[in-house]
Length: 111
View (spheres, rainbow, N blue to C red):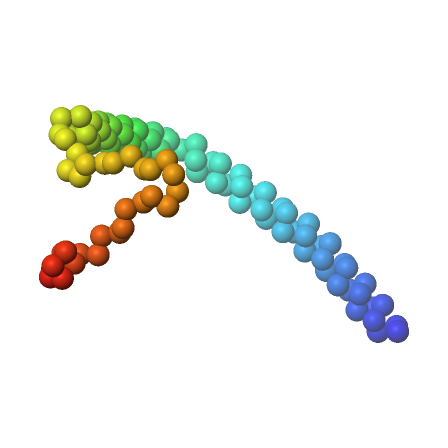
């Protein structure tokens, strides 16, 4: 029992000391990263990259909008100008009056 309590106390002390040291190291790294992020070369590079991303994204959006409007125009033009290729008959009002499904076989038994 004495060994278990000693072991648990050792783990507890190690955890507390390690957590404090870890937090201090984390804070040091965080400050170092902020210092690097404030350097003029890094700021300039970040702004340059932001401009390039904005320009590229606008170009992609414009291209997609052009393609979409072109396709929409083609779809609307095709649906309004042409007659349907297959005549569409209204469905019968009474169930059971549906025509037979096409089988691909002609009335004389041939294809």
